[in-house]
Structures are given as structure tokens and as C-alpha cells.
Length: 250
Image (cartoon, rainbow, N blue to C red; front, side):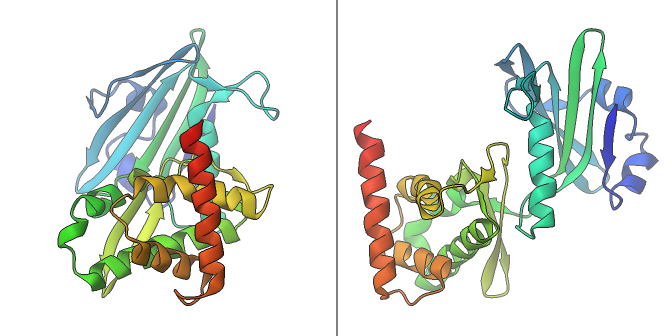
């Protein structure tokens, strides 16, 4: 059996007997969504509170994904856990893994991933819903945090693959915001340079329909570390628009 327990969370989990696979697998918990059924198995996410610390536990059985590296498949949470560790190693802000394990049991390939809940953070989508009533300074701080997060991601040689508002979480920090990413399953290396980067950013800008041109320029200014009036920002906006039109016509 493969097993990982974050050193910082091991004492807390151990104090409640939650470092054992069988215990976590059988623990009665409240599901936060309907089970995903497919890939030959199932996957479901549950809420777990241990004292004051909240977690999300994803359980899977025979819920596999195949790749060149794993032609016979592996649990999708195995890839997600690997990417969480990859982000950590590259200093790209993202969700934190507390526990991961997988095993073969009774003809099933079972796997679990426990991550720390971002209870004091809010997804970008929630901020976009109140965009019209936010002050200009608040808007500027939010788009800057998102742009800086995208910059860190791409400078690390990665693309997220699902760079959507619901996957960007933000927390107020002084006059600005901290930002981090969740849902890392589709992360991969950026093989095609700027073309991959444009493809990664376009879904965010398409879904952030509340953003004005000023907001988008602010996002790209933080991303490119350039002035909002810089010509390269205009060039990027044109590339993103071409990509958007291409997606809309498909």
C-alpha cells in the first residue's frame, strides 16, 4: 500500500485514529456532492472536521485514468496528489495534501486523498458575483493576485488545464489578496510555450465576464509584470480574443 501523511497533520490525525486506511475508508461522513460514476468505478468527496481543522476527503474505487506513464491506469487522486506535491516543490500556491493512500482490496483499486479545507478563503467566482459593488481598489487587488498566481504557475513551467474562477481561491492579506489553486488533476508541463499559456488563461477570462477591459489589463499587467498600457498587453489581449473566438465557433 502506498501511504503519505503530512508531518504537520500527523499528530492531529493520529489523535483521532485517522491514520489507518480502514478507519478512514469506513468513517461515516457527509458527502458534499453526488458520486461520480464512470471509468469503471466511482469517486466521491466528503467533509471531515477534526477539532477546529476542516478537511475534504476524496474516496475512490476503480476510478482510473490511463496515460503513457500508466497505460494500465491509476486512481485519478494519485495524479492529483502527485501534482499537489509538484506545486509545493515549485512554490506554486495550491491546496495542501494531508493524507494519501491507495491499495488493492477485494478486487478493487481503492484510493483516498485528504486535503486541508480552505474555509477562510473564497473562490474567485464568489468575488465576481459581487463585482459591481466592489471598490476600484478591491477589484485591482483581486485581479493583481490572480495575475501573480498565473505568473507563478507558468514560470514554473506548468499549465493548470482548468484555470477557472471556481478553482482560484483568494484570502485578504493586508491591502491585497493571497491566491492559490485547487483541482490540479489536469496539470501538465507547458510543452508549447506561449501557445499553452494563452490556452490556459483564456478559459478564466471567458468565464470572468464581470471583468472590464481595465480589469483584464490589470490581470495581464501583473501576469507579465508590465505597465497596463504596455504594447505587449495589447498583443496578449488580441491573442486571447482570437482563442476565445476559436472556442466559441467550435
